[in-house]
Length: 114
Image 1 (tube, rainbow, N blue to C red):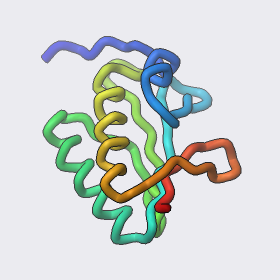
Image 2 (image 1 turned 135 degrees about the vertical axis):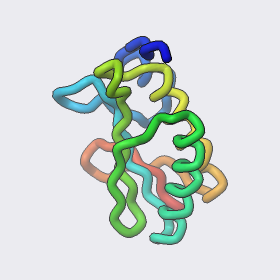
Image 3 (image 1 turned 90 degrees about the vertical axis):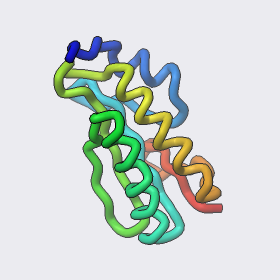
Image 4 (image 1 turned 180 degrees about the vertical axis):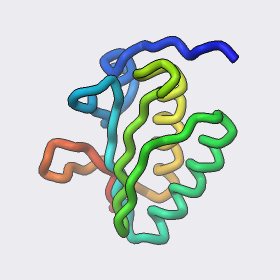
């Protein structure tokens, strides 16, 4: 297997909506917010299936209707095309839940049910 090529958080963020750089490391982050736990966990399940197919797994944290995600490719010690691809999959997977971009007040974007 070839090592993924590091592109960096800035290059990834330029191609993605609502993702932010992570302080202190080459990674990107986004917080998704859903109507309830069932919607959040359903989204995580759909993303997990896609992540497994890519053999690229997110760092994520779930509390009730919120899922905080950090993406970086550990083999490259930073952000690669795999992270951009998985971020795009996450964004698309959130759309059928009728989500819109909303803020948390801390500057971190999220998805929130209308």
